[in-house]
Image (cartoon, rainbow, N blue to C red; front, side, top):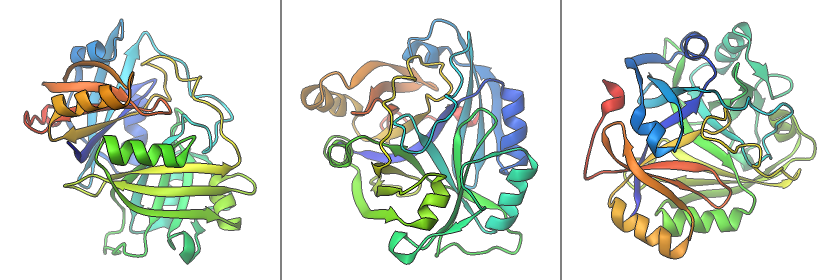
Length: 305
């Protein structure tokens, strides 16, 4: 039993129209499918209200914007990357300076100080920049050493979704042993460039790449901050809270994986139901980050219609 692919990020927003303007104009996403109510998602999340969704695509990757009525709590002011509700998507760009300037123009809130930062080779050698959208969700622009600069430039898709965790070894064990992801890289990032990137002082963070079996990009990145210490995720209590992002993971045998989780990680399976027309389950990791699992035996791309 294993995760085959990361199919979708479900991102909570306060206003779909406002979010659409930002994600299309500032980041280059395009709308796919129709805006629609999502009763299956409301049932899966045990949400007593209505959820309206719309899907967008950048390169080969997709996100779903979800707006709740009644709404949940706003993203907590003063949040930082070490806090255990932190989750970003890292958008690969062929021209990070132009992408950075476009985000500034559209009012993105900086996390990084001093613009894009060049990380040392020991930290991967990427050029990166972090900011927040108008709802407070963190985003990262990243130019990897292997990124090919296209003549037209622009953003190419997202490489990973990074989540902060309280115990890096415990989380590696959960994602590797219970979800079947492969540990691809594990490095310690620190130094002045990392401090400026995170907008924090004296950062020391374990960065661990966990890859799905069939489709390594996008993948999940675990962030284990040794310094500074992060706060627990108690501020995210309801399905509708803005900080409650959820990744949709395609697995090869949903019933067997759920049985394994129930045996080895009691309480990690929250409920079963449907998502976008297919069988699904809602689970959480040891730090409370939630995931929607869908079964590859019942393929459905309803979020594209």
